[in-house]
Length: 280
Image (cartoon, rainbow, N blue to C red; front, side, top):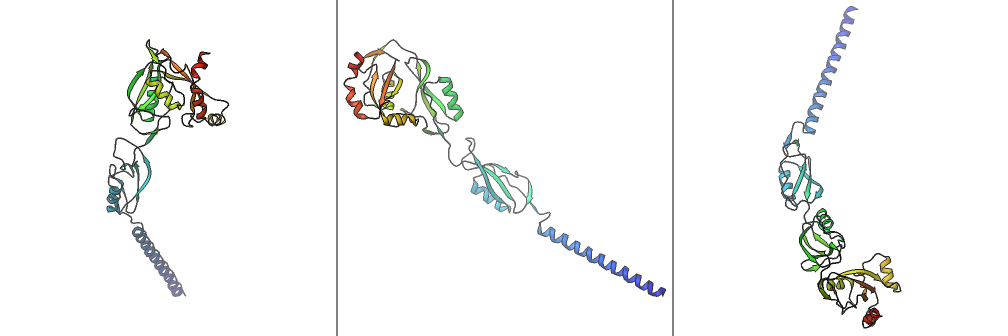
């Protein structure tokens, strides 16, 4: 009876030992399989791709078994357009093969900046506004004006710039700034039939400035354009009256008030009578 118990106990111990060996073998196999599957211990060093163009960066990373992914773009004048400016993980880090390297690239084109409306604000304020937008003042031209240091016009390449026109960042403009009234008498040009833009250019050339701009309230087209907030120069309104009238001699820097209508026939028919209206 005792021999039977001894043999039974030995059998149980043998089975437990066998089970333990099997479990150990299974665990060892799973460990090695996971290590191979996850490429445990196999890492590659991340190359430095900052300053490289994106196609070049892709080649460098692919050679190391890595992938490139562009996640954002920015604009900087300090580095060439289209190059990588930032990467994550950084150069020198050790990562597993197949890992994505996230990069931020510099834009491929120069940012276009809209020119703000600078008319009738101080020169210092206009200069600060331009600098904040990435533009600069190349030249300041002083013209006679009723008020000192107020911007009369914004020019580039000899022509006036309308608000909203886009320029490449870093571009320079010329500011026409008032220097106060002079003492010289200048001839007032006849502005009848001109748009606001044409009238402003003619007045600046004559060392005069635009004063009040009045839209004909009886003109439906002009009134609708004003209600929509459109610039009369852009909606093709025409000067049908001015004060002082054309043909007079006044002090340089004076303001000329303009009356606009969207009807060109009104401007043409009233042009010959403007002097008489002003006289009476």
